[in-house]
Length: 81
View 1: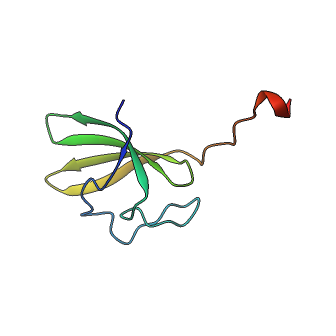
View 2: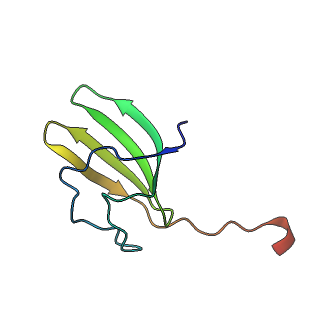
């Protein structure tokens, strides 16, 4: 699993924002979770600063977010139980 930050190409997502936190989809920081080559281009899984997991498809039409989860829930630690 890749755990780096960086842009994946922003064509098609410029001007869109995360519906959960309002952060621009084309801006950093977001974390690239994994990248996969496909017959048509690439699929990139990213995580927004709020924790929302996104699936980005990058092909000849540009970059599109095709799926997005809700923000990550805070993890409870054993000390909080």
